[in-house]
Length: 366
Image (cartoon, rainbow, N blue to C red):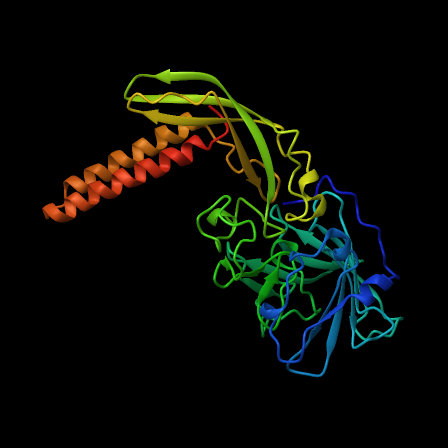
């Protein structure tokens, strides 16, 4: 999730950490980026400070050292061990992947440094890079799941669809490896061409039964800068119940459990400090055939990027909309002439109804 609540990283334009140099991770020649270890492994928060990653270009003898800060933002890139940085980055404070400016020294001479300013859309996709005179150097267009088309300043397609200014920060502001096409979102690698993660979700079955699903299949509305979320636990108390013997709707008010800390280790340092994570939520539950509402229970929720409530919806509206869809599907089933196929259609609707009722109950508003 996003780190709006995190401290702004120190601008380290001309300095790199000695700890980073000591903990350099080397990826051997011919080893793909997907085989590299993401930064969200079992390393402690202190181990991630100043973490460095070395990548080799398998089509040449070049190698690159990437220097990261505590928030896993790439601050500096050095090429072939040069004492002069090849690229350096400064970020905006409002979001972890909002890039402000890049200092670019194409020849690593230390004298030919140019400033490149990044323009990003509402999902923090980099749409253009301009120089310090406001002249557009390059533009970018994306599919919903992040496949990029490199454009020239006049919006015409680039001849080889490769950046002419060696820009690697693209979809959602994250780095895209030019060789593999994979994008590192701190804990996992993302494949835009597949629209899915290439690593299992380290948080397991927390907000989806699909461990490789990207942002609940809603890439235009949600972000996931870390490849994870923030786990927050709540104590829930029954506040009302409506309905009869056949079906009863239970409504709960849930307050954050003070005895359980937000999961900082697994979910990336100050991710969980985002002030938009709610301390109080509401939940619904449906019981049938004479069942009674639980008086209390405990639950944990997962919040992903940005730290908005992914279930910020109305239970009543959700169920009303779903009933309207089911009504249309039932009419379709009635038109099926084959009796076996018709029974299968009706069975599928019943299963979908149960599943969607659980989904609607997860909405945080009545």
